[in-house]
Every structure is written in structure tokens, then in C-alpha cells.
Length: 166
Image (cartoon, rainbow, N blue to C red; front, side, top):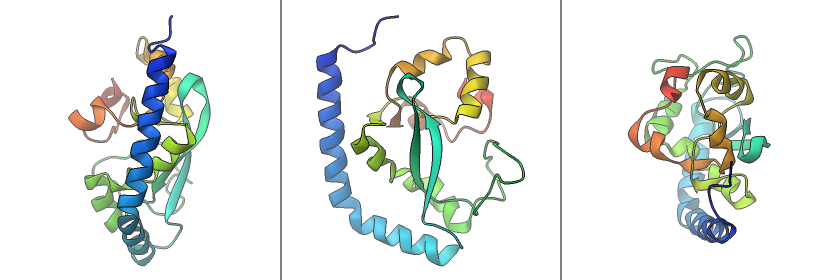
């Protein structure tokens, strides 16, 4: 299939992404410091959580988030969807997820070029492999850069199953 955006549109979108991201970092830096300190005070472990995700054209990249779960949350279970009353979510993590502040470090992913401001959410390879089998045309999502926000984030809550993604 053809590329969904011509090169000039991709370039304009990239310029907007980078400009808005740099402005957001400048304006939100005090909030980043407050959230980082609150995470350190709330639970043991690093402030940031780094997870490999599948992006544009199936390229793997490291996605950055403020940590909202206990350290090594999936060590025993392996990859699982988080649910509404997930015991792995920290007290502060609940607020961060509710307000979507846990996603703010992904601004760095946008500046790096792994993501865009708007696009489909990137998922882990484990789940992408399942979704490709169960949802027709799912792989078309990988023809555009994943986004910090998109239709699903505006209209729905966090995905907690394959059916939510559908």
C-alpha cells in the first residue's frame, strides 16, 4: 500500500512535532521536577520507566514514561495488560495514569523522531504479534509514526485487553 502521507506533509508534521515538544519541555520542566520528586518519595525505584515498543515500519524503540508501577511489575507474570484495579500500580501512579502525566517523558521520544504528537499508540512486540493475528489490517498502524496521543486516548481509557485495542 502507498504511504499515507506525502513527504512534504511528513516534513511539516515533523517540524510541528519538534517545535511543540521543545516548547512543552520548556514550559513543563517545573512539573517534570515535581513529578520526579514525588515518584522518588512515593516508592522505591527509578523515576523513569523504559520499555521497548514497536513503532514506524516495525522499528523497535525505547519508550519513556514516568514510572507508575512497582519495580519489576511483570517479572513473574510476563507481559500482561494493566487493569483498572491493578495491584502493581503505585499510589502516585494511579494519579499519574488518571491525568496521563505518566506519558509526558514521551516528549523526548518525539524529539528523537521515534514518535509524533498524534498517531496510534505504540505497543509492545508481544502484543503487536497477537494483535496482527486477531485484528484485520492492524499492521497498517505501523505505516505511520506512533503518537503521544490519538483518537483512542481521547475517546477511551487505557487498553486492558485485546478487545479494547479492537
